[in-house]
Image (cartoon, rainbow, N blue to C red; front, side):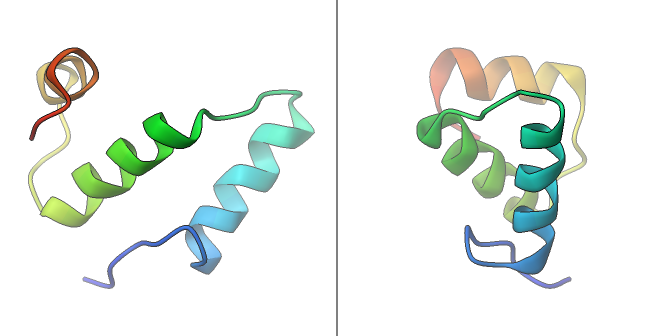
Length: 57
């Protein structure tokens, strides 16, 4: 699978959709989300909570 970066088309699409809905994403949260997606692990609610709380995958 292709790795996501802040300059990738996929990230830019998500960022644009958030701005259309008047949302913005914190850069720290964005980096954590990109790291999770690039890790290749299945994304579960528990994984999301762990990353947001501990900052580790």
